[in-house]
Amino acid sequence: GNSVTQMEGPVTLSEEAFLTINCTYTATGYPSLFWYVQYPGEGLQLLLKATKADDKGSNKGFEATYRKETTSFHLEKGSVQVSDSAVYFCALLNYGGSQGNLIFGKGTKLSVKP
Amino acid sequence: GAVVSQHPSWVICKSGTSVKIECRSLDFQATTMFWYRQFPKQSLMLMATSNEGSKATYEQGVEKDKFLINHASLTLSTLTVTSAHPEDSSFYICSAFYIAGAPLGETQYFGPGTRLLVL
Image (cartoon, rainbow over all chains, first blue to last red):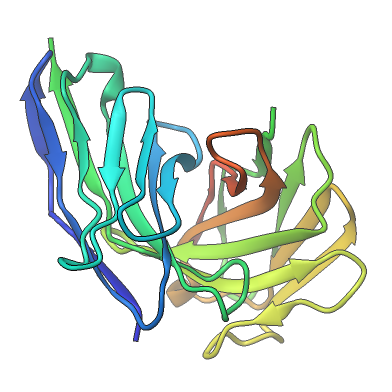
């Protein structure tokens, strides 16, 4: 079946530190991969996505590369800010199922200290 | 743009009562909305797909008679938890499908969630 595994948090970093949040997946076929972010008190927001192998999704300084050989989609940012403090969810969508059948990881809480 | 709201944000009710949760797309029309459920420290689980003007499609293991979904307009979907019990206590999240500009393209926009506590 389809599943997503992401590193457990919480992750605590100092401002301007380098961020990596690991995400690996299990899926049949060729899924699309996503990173969502949930800021305190708000709904999930799509941060970036990649639809095929070797694609790099990027947005707001974050990036992730779809690695089929390692079934990974690790999230990275070169220099985090306090405003990046949030919960980050890795997800996959395997076409062939319903449009909404996003499979989510458990989420990783990031806290950035000034 | 592409804001999705939910109401109420939290609700406490007695066992046996019914609770209705609203999901609205505020600045766009959504023919398809989705309802998810999230347990503490767990990932979101899709419950059902709500289609405007037709019956919802439920995921395996979700009781459609217990979780009634109505999508009567292009901007509103409702989830009613009927005869709620303590095990229904959870965080319910809706989303709406929207086609945004680059680089995101087709995506789901999520509401802030509704926390339900059944006593």
